[in-house]
Structures are given as C-alpha cells and as structure tokens.
Image 1 (cartoon, rainbow, N blue to C red):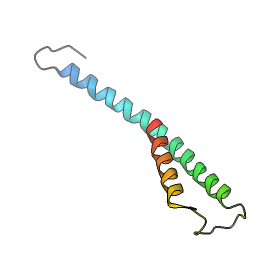
Image 2 (cartoon, one colour):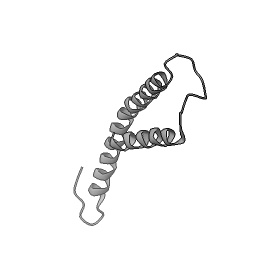
Image 3 (tube, helix red, strand yellow):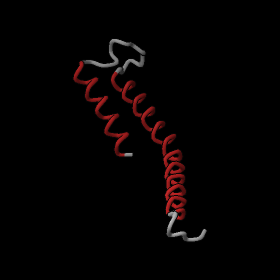
Image 4 (cartoon, rainbow, N blue to C red):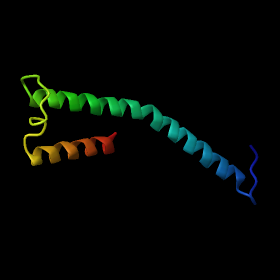
Length: 80
C-alpha cells in the first residue's frame, strides 16, 4: 500500500479495514450477548414462578416489575 497524498487513498483503505475488523469483533460478541440475555430471561421466569408452570399471569407480577426487567435488558445490552 503506497501513500498517495493527493488522493488520500491510504487513509480510506485503512478506515475501511478498521471498520471490517470492528464488524468482525461485533459479530463474535453478538451470540454470547444473546445467549446471556436468553439464559437470564429463563432464569428470571423460573424464579418468578416457583411451581415450575408456565403461566402468563405470573410472568410479570406488576407493571413496575415488567419495566424494571426491560430496563435491565437494555442496560445489559449497552454495557456489552
């Protein structure tokens, strides 16, 4: 790769390659994040309903609980 000061080609090529690397890193992190969210969700549902039955009524005890869970998922996705 040669430096061409008038066209800026090297700078564009380096930016393109760094973007490709970033996309690859994100694609490696994505399955892990999704599995952690899914496992956490299943665990929360199991602990919320100690009988082990899958009731839609006991999925969220109150609207504030549903909001708390939604915020937790959103914050978790932002951190990872």
